[in-house]
Every structure is written in C-alpha cells, then in structure tokens.
Image 1: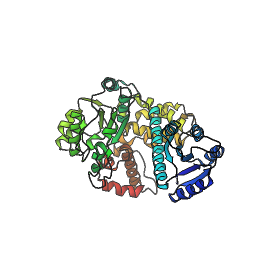
Image 2: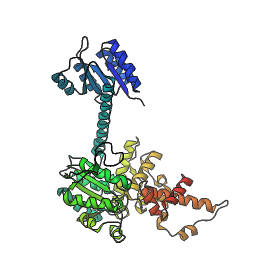
Image 3: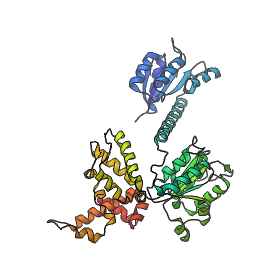
Image 4: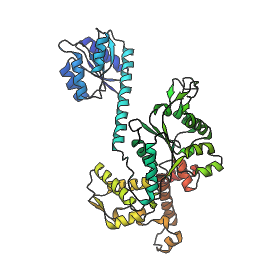
Amino acid sequence: MKKKVLIIDDEELIRLSLTEGLKDFDYEVETAKDGNEAIDKINHFRPDVVLLDMKLKSENGLDIAKNIKQLDDYIEIIIMTAYGDIKTAIKAIKVGAIDFLKKPLDLEEINVSISKALKNQLIKRKLEIYQERESKMNHEFIGKDPIMNDTLKKMDILSKNDSVTVLLRGETGTGKEVVASCIHQNSIRKDSVMLSINCAAIPSQLLESELFGFEKNAFSGATSRKRGLLELVDGGTLFLDELGEIPLDIQAKLLRFLETRKFKRIGGLESIEVDIRIIAATNKNLEEAIVKKEFRQDLYYRLNVVPIFIPPLRDRGYDVLKIAKHFLAIYSNKFGKSFIGFSEKAEQEIMKYSWPGNVRELKNVVERIVILNDGEILDVQNLPIELQNDISKKDPLEIVANFNIEENFSLEDRLSEIEKKYIQKALDQANGNHTNASKLLGISRFALKRRMEKYF
C-alpha cells in the first residue's frame, strides 16, 4: 500500500510541483491551501506525513501543526519555510514536527525527510504495541499449588537480586517466558526494556550478529553498523529461550560476556560494557548435552547458580483449573462471548487430562472452545475430543479392545487420522518449530515435512 502525503501550502504552483514530484517517488498525494481544508483532508485522506508551509497567508503553520497533532499524533509533520532560523526550527520541533526544510525545496531532500518520518512512525507504533502487550501481560504467576512453593520462592528472591543470572528449566509450554517476565517486572529493572530471543528459531550464522551486532564492512553485506541485543537491552533484561540450541562457538562468546559483562561487535576492536541481566531457559537435558559435547560445561556452571525448575502442568493440581478460568476470561472478553466458567464434569475432564503441551496447550484449547461455542457454561461436549478421551494414558491394546470394527472400516484412514493428530500435537508443543517437533515424534525433520505436506 502506498504511503500518503498531504501538502499544505497557499501557493498553487508549489502544491502542483510537489505533487508531481512525490508521485514519482510512489507516494499517494493530496493538497490543501489552508488549515480548514487541511483538517478536512486529514479526516478523509488520513495521511501518514504532512508537508506544511510555515507561513500561510492568514495562518501560522505552527498553529495548524498543533491542531493536526491533537487530531492524530501518529501523523508526522515536516515544516517547509523560506524564513528558516534556529529559533523557528526549535518552535517547530516543540509542536511535534519531525523535520524542518528550507525553500527552495529539493525533491531528493524531501524524499529523504519523508522516509525518515515514516521510519519514526513505525518505531512509535512498535513501541505502543510493545507497551500495550506489557501492560496487559500478567506478571503474577497464576496458581499456588504446593509444588510451586520452591519456584515462587526463588522467583521472589531473584527479583530482588537483579544482577544474578537465572536459568529456567522445564518442559515446553510450562510458562518459562512468563516466569522471566515476572522476575523482570518485580525487579528494579522493571522500567527498562526486556527483550526475548528464541535461539532455536534463528539460524546459527545469524544468531551471533543478533546478540553481539557488527561493524560496517565486518562481512559481505554489512553495509552499516548494527547494534546487537546485548547493547540494545542495556539496563534491562535479555531472555534467551531455547538456550540449549546455541552453537558451541557462540556459547564461548556468551560465557565471556557473562564473566566480564563486556563484548565486541563482529569486526569490532572496541570492548563494549553493558549492565543487563540474562535470564535463560531450556527444556533440554543440559547434563546429557554436556556428555555429548553439545553444551559447554563451564557455561552450564556459570548459568546454573540459581536454577528454577517449573513443574509440568499435570503436576500442579488445581492450578490447571485456575489457569483455564484465567484464559476463559481473557478470550471471552476478546471474542465478545459471555462464558463465566466450566461445568463440574468439564472441570473433571480438564483435571484428568495429562496436558503434554502444558500451559501453551491449555491456552490454545481454551481459545479454540471459546471461538467455536456460545453460552455461559462450557460443558464436556464443548471440549476437544482429546480431553474427553486422553489416549496418551492408555495402552493401545486397551483402546482397540474397547471398540468394534464397523462396516466400511478403513485401517489406513484410521492410522492416518491418528498420525495427523500426533503431528499437530507435536507442532503445538514445539510452538511450530519443525526441528523440535520432529525430535518429539522421533522422526527426521525431512520425514516430518513429508507428512505435513500429506496432511496439511
């Protein structure tokens, strides 16, 4: 979609020439000759950027800029004037303008200024999304089952000791990122940023540059300096999810950083010192990985100072229902439904189910049943079939013994149906990561890909 630019100038010739020039840069352009016409155009045209003349015949451009910002603060304003000076530029910036251009105008210069304005707009939108997500995120760990006592106690201690590196361990989907967020939000770093990176989702050749950044010309394609996450999170918290998937050479660099709190960008000579907390998480057996030479023993000891184990959902007693009701309230509100709870029988099935995908699976199940059903109380028949008949706890021979083979029965179709469900379950547990899903299923990634092409 083309970006929209509104030109506000009382000189018709300037409006016409700028319109033609900016259309050549592939912008959608509208014009206005005064403030009233501009406000009307903004309401209907909804521009991304406004080019505003400082001095119109009967109006001050700064007053129009104020009105535009009150109407829509996302609109970026670029002031144009033939009477530029420092004081005027400062006044323009104070009312919300992002740039200040002197006439006569150069189209290339205008295009650069508009590009800068659009980048700034994107940053503002991303920041708002991030702040909105943070404000809505539940920073209290739901549930108080006794099995969680040790976890909750350590979370409280580590929130108050903000320099200690944390290692979170537990099955996939148990809520490790939520725990990390709780620790961050209850620490003195809560007003600083927390960023998360899934180490398994980023190719190894890119992971190093994501973490440490690089200098211009450090390698082919490095056309400018890039700051890594360690630098961007200075003062805050970096959450390294799937830590066990980090390649050995990057593990060595991460160890050096943890010991010195200093690092060098790729291709850089200068050591950069930052003040950040590292919270790492893994569902991998690191002790076994050390024996297999897949994980550095010295890094393990450096991370494992105060480990936190997050129990699987199946071991957390009535926390399962508390979490299910929490998600029910969230998705009922999100989708405009009026659910207030589960029936007693539905609660029993929820408690009986083994939840191999843990909290992530529970969240997805609740979202699905809220979308597909209406009413106030969710009953057993509203639950997915896997909750009504948890085959993960049954012997396959027992399952076969308890049903009759009907006419037109197809063994191939039944096996395909079961295989498809297990593949979907593995993908849900692995959060869509094909490598991890294939490991859960005990097949190669190529075999998983072939089966996905067959069923999905």
